[in-house]
Each structure stands twice: as C-alpha cells, then as structure tokens.
Image 1 (cartoon, rainbow, N blue to C red):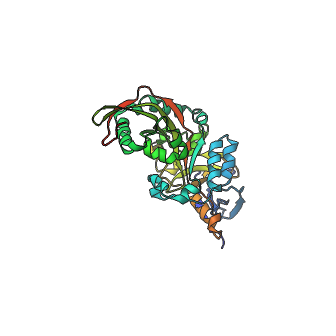
Image 2 (image 1 turned 60 degrees about the vertical axis):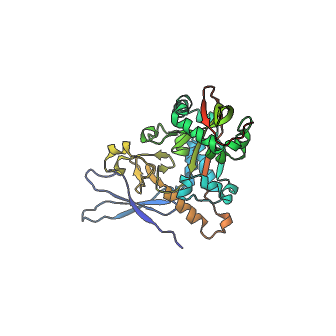
Image 3 (image 1 turned 90 degrees about the vertical axis):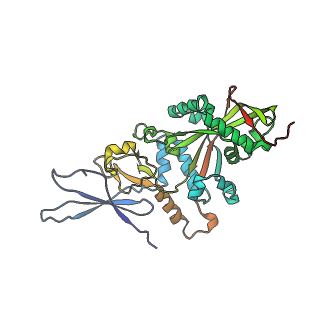
Length: 357
C-alpha cells in the first residue's frame, strides 16, 4: 500500500530569489517517513500559479541521531539509537504516570525497559544548570519537612527490608524498585521554558537527550537506634543521588524543527503571540508546519518533529513484521548513582510493631 502524503504550510515570509512584491506560496509534501519535497507557486501575469517542484534532500527520523553526533550531542544520539533498535515496547499513559506498574510487567523487564547507568555523573556534572540543581537538592531540599515526612513513610513501609550496611545490593539488583521504595525527594530540571536552552547556540546534550528530567535522592544507608517505645532515631549518613527520565513518545509533544544542519526549537509564528511562547510549555504542543530559517529552501528548511512522528515510524516500520521483530522501545533511563555523605540528616520516626533487636 502506498504511503499517504500530507501537504503542510511553511513558517516563512520570504522564499528567495523572488521579485519585490511578488507573492509566494510554499507547500511541503511529506510522507510518514519525513521524506519531503516543496512546491513553490508564484503568480504569472495572468494571475495563475505555475508550480515548480523542488526536490529536497532526503531527511528521515533516523537521520536525527547523526545530526546529534555532528553537534556533539552524543547522549541524545545514544538515547535515539536505543529507542529505534530496542525491542518493541510502548508505554501506556498510566505506566508513564505510575512507573510502579512496570514492575508488574515481566515482558517490560525482559526487554530492558529499565536502563540503569545510562548516563554518568561526569556527563551530568558538565552542565551548569544540573550542577546548580544538584547543589540545591543536597543542601536544601533533602532537609525540608516534606522530605523528612517521605523518609518516615518509606521507613515504615519498608521497615522489614532495611539492610545492614548500605543499599548497594538492592540498588544494583533492581534500580526501579529501589527508586519506588526509597526515593524521598527530587528536583526538576528543564521543566519550565526558562530552563530550556532553546537558542541554537545554547542547546546542550542534556536537553537533546531528555528534554526535562528529575534528580532524585534516596537513602543509601540507614542506621536505626531505638529510643523508647515505638520511637526510633533514623540516621542517614549516606544518600544516593541519580537522574531519572521516561524516554517515550506518549502524547503530544513538539521536539523541534530538524534538518541535516541541526535543530531550531521555537519559531514565533507557531503561536498566536510570539512573546507568549516564552511562558508556554512545549510539552503539550504539536507543530505541523516546517520552518524556513533563511533564504535557501534547500538548506534552510527545518522540518517539525513531534512525538506522533515516532509513533507513526513505529507503526510503519513494524507493519507486516513478526511481532518478535518489532522495534521502538520506550524506556526508563537512570543515571549511575552518586553516593553523597549526609552527616546531618537524621530524624525521629515512629515504627510500630518493629521487633527490637
């Protein structure tokens, strides 16, 4: 069956060369694999619009990883490759929201949906925004009353499974379970438009790889001391700090305008008010028109990429294939653990029915 095509307008005011005052209409014809060509129409003296086909360079979703590597965004390319080459798994909206549901899915765990140590702390620490948020997490956020309340709740919930010594074995055996059982505080990175490096000269690899993600804290060692009755002193001399992100294409999200030169994140004409874009989240926006960022339609045309394009790729690429050969794997990405001393982190906790040693 032939692939369906779509015609979409272009975000631009000019297509050069053209005569002053001459109207120009540009339409881009794209198939589901993002292979496009342009049709440029200009009025003749009789008011007609003779059409001119302009074949464009082939640019497909799989080319995005190459563009990333050319710009030094190697972790973004690594994540793309892992999604395209991984065995098929598609998150539901509920799984994306409630990651604990993944623990109950043996197929998900078998397919490597949970990816521990996907990025290193050396890489994370190379970004000023991440360093700033990390310092905020370990010097302020983990000592808040809300965080201590979460610690108390986690200790009570898992009181029979507190290890002697560190949590190394538990974290190594199942990072997702460790995260779900013990994380007690987190801080978001790139969640607001102000934190997104959206200018072409400021784009960083963390943004290309994740878009936004969280830094989490979980106890890495707990020392319980009985005080009286059901009251214990819980000292947490070590915590683990790690990054976590869901890497998927669920829902609507605009991922930028791409071509072989790079990426453009925003175009003012996408929104009714260009200034309003600064206060608008990109996470629920879908863009369908390309961006002509320059005069040469051959090299300055950037194609819009949305979550739905990846879902369409998965549907098209897997069609007619045996299910065991399907590709397109949604994932939970974790960084390696950074073990941080916290000599001043201790709380009182009421632990009912705990057997006193």
